[in-house]
Image (cartoon, rainbow, N blue to C red):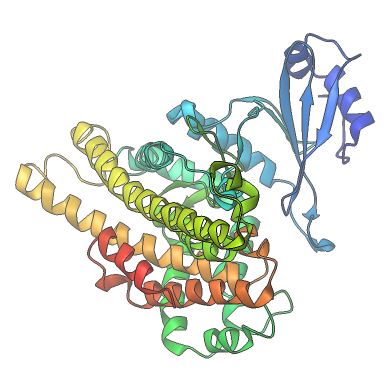
Length: 441
């Protein structure tokens, strides 16, 4: 152990720590003269350092005893680093091509050393804002979610294995309580942490707080989130927790991991793609910054704006296709794993009972229908909290004009309320895509 008690690291003490930790120092060949260290923790909770040497590189992530974006007035357990480390190892073992390898974990220092996901990887959310298409995103994310969710569920595992794992992750209660507060509670009441694009969305925020039907549905989702230990979920699978190139997809930051409802992960990812869809119109005037070089006609403002609008329309169609493909591919891969392991050690559906193809098909259909509706509900709840809750998304926040930003947010908010309250009425992802396209004002 490099240090005997917790202390936040700075660049100087970080070098001392690396020197005292063989599993890290070996990654850079024990050479420190040309070491480059950069702090990139732009998230809400942690310090994140990129360390690059002549012989190698890695990332150090250290949890702080408070929420970084708010300060010491909101304490937060450092133990979240432990749960992140074991979730990375568990999910990495199941889907190594989409999860960074853990090199080192120090529980005393609440510190994880892991593989550096090098450029040109960027955070998916930033890529979506920039209008970049990722042709393999749906394929990769459906693979990650199908493998990690199926293989940590009772369909694959024995009840003994499952309960042991559930008990381990019950210790991540503080992060779960944070989710309970910011996703299922604060947006539906007056809270000092809530914010929205005021004054444009003042009435919309009030409408959320006064919508009794919405509150009834959110209560049901909160109950599932708190009570249903379905699989080891990432717990915060938004587009800021994924790094991408056109050929690679890497899932990071599972510090909110615990055994919960599968639909919370799938919904978080799809819900954030829907937010990105509605944000696109707000970036129409900024498209030229990222796409102008592709236009051969830049002599007039009219031409440029027309080109920008065309780019936006095409890109929104790609987002919709990615949403649709993600669910369809997930469904296909999850049920294929189920078929492959139907005679395995999983104890949810014993072969001695569910012993004919017709019954197996009925069970799968029932299971996947409920999971689809959970996905829509949780995804909608995540959308709502990003518009009228404490932590917003850069997709909207980067829209400079407040009135335009509010228009985009309002469309997303109305669609989210529809999905949450009427999720049981949707029978396919195609119907959801239709609802998204018709939700635009």
